[in-house]
Image (cartoon, rainbow, N blue to C red; front, side, top):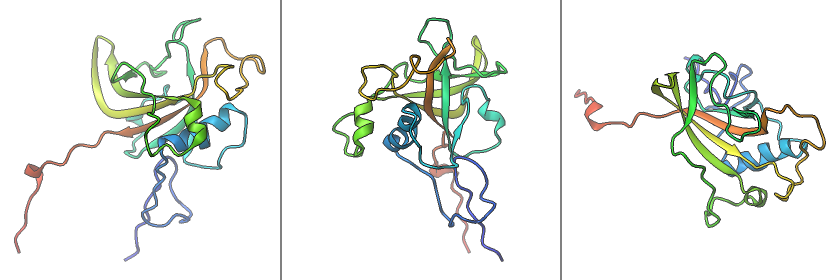
Amino acid sequence: MAEREERPSGGGDDDNGKYPIGFRFKPTTEELVELYLLPKLLHEPTVPDEFVIEADAYGCDPEESGVDDTWYFLSPRYRKYRGGDRPVRRTVDDRGRWKPSTGQSKLPEEEDASMSHSKAKKAAFSENTLAYYVGSTKDETKTKWLMHELVVPETPDNGFHIKSAAAEPRDNMLLNRYVVCRIYKEKIPYLASQMTCFLI
């Protein structure tokens, strides 16, 4: 019986068998900011990686993806209103929307021992947690899809000298050239009552 290959999370099937069984792409929040988001914002080379997809993560309905894995996106973020700072988080087909689950952004704490990346610390990025809802705003249903949205403010004084509107033409409705979105399905807690014992 042939051994079954595990499929890496974050994009594409492993058709070439180049990943060992049990391989998982699971970067930390700080690694996503330092190795993927900041280089894109600074027009620097990024880590070559097929698991981080460059696409509009907000425009597509995750329910139609047909997968249960974690997906990583480098995504643009657009304004809902011209001149405003509120982002568009509704899908292009108007089937659903990403809704903040806490109502506020979370900044990483400096004393967190996991923050070993100096660039990620300096970036002062925010992390938003969103849940995906389907249906109209007045009659919507929460799904099991969640998103962690990592945002680095693109300002001249944030210490990264990010090239923005002064260096390249930009759509008036573009709020962020790139943010990182980690999209995954919420896991159902395992209940002891669901366990079935078999006696031999």
